[in-house]
Image (spheres, rainbow, N blue to C red):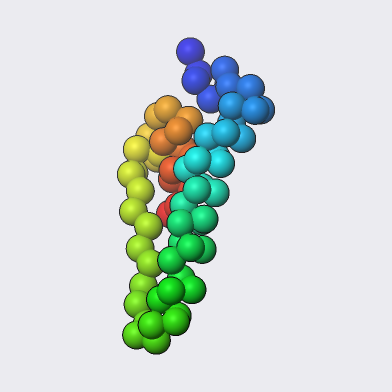
Length: 66
């Protein structure tokens, strides 16, 4: 059973929305405050390497942070 192929387009879009778009929105919300403080900094997004193993589609979507 290939879990990725069992997903509908809607399910895949939902997974991407949570795992990739959600991370982007978090960064988008943080950066203006960092700029305003004027002290510089970095945003580090950490994800699992499980997406490399052909694991569950949610893990594959998280690997997009890489």
